[in-house]
Figure 1 (cartoon, rainbow, N blue to C red):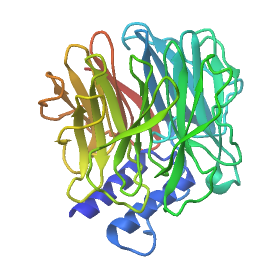
Figure 2 (figure 1 turned 180 degrees about the horizontal axis):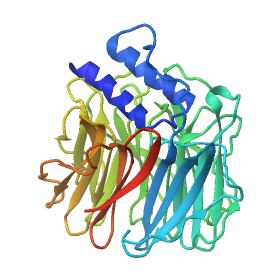
Figure 3 (figure 1 turned 180 degrees about the vertical axis):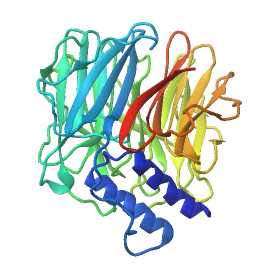
Length: 415
């Protein structure tokens, strides 16, 4: 199997477990096959109307003030729901799931690569997700939002971060601290650009726990149209945003400072990958040593740099080390977390005889050297889109997996 064929196979393996992918994403997955094999039409075996599996469709998790907050999107026999849980003991035990909506079913587009997101500010929790509007282009609609002001016990519909609702929003990233909640997302409010497969990345903030949102800013008007974004605050209230740029299709890092000024800082992994389709690959971001040391994992489809790569920055994300490849060229979706004691853990999915499976590697010296990859997911399971989060005792990894493609479940592992 050559590298281009391998690149194509990765995404169709992911599609098998991410059956909740909306029509737009399925069409974009088809374009990857086209671009990778120089064909002029989509392959006949692409399923454009797959039946949704039951079980977990999306995951998000944050650590706020030593408390883990988990948001799970599920599907059960035609009904979708979003559930909130928390853990006060590092993920060993979890609270009883709370349905954050007043009705059992929500019309939502949920998938591991386009999940609902949550953020926490003191006692306030905000959740946003992509709505599904039947008959709209790709059945995609504006974002929806709910909030809780009592630590997740009760939930109410709330204003959305976006001040433009004439089209769809997707690929959200959020983070919160004691001062504010910030959100970024992709939309096409400025119309189609001259660059194929692009959207604009927008930003808004709330200082009152999601009761109101600031006027939207455009951080970058030409980004990849369908790659997930990552947003995280440092200790000085700077919001760092990791996203996939366009022309070339490499990952970029930018920062919104406390005065709400945006600055694009760097390219994270300058592979010079110029891809005309939608790769659906984001990355992970973590801070260490009073935020001066920044860790990142990024995926690339460049023929000479296929797979997942780790990079570190010693100057707040302005410059980066040479990339270290994690796993082999079939690795695709990845995340990273760091502990104050110098440990760093990266997780990713990679092709095995079962399809995509979850692997991890550890560093004991701030990312300078890495252990050999170790498989996390069990044999016989197709598993994808892992997340990793640090806590007081170490790390918690979680992902979505399926044995038969008909039912997906959440898997967790303490590391």
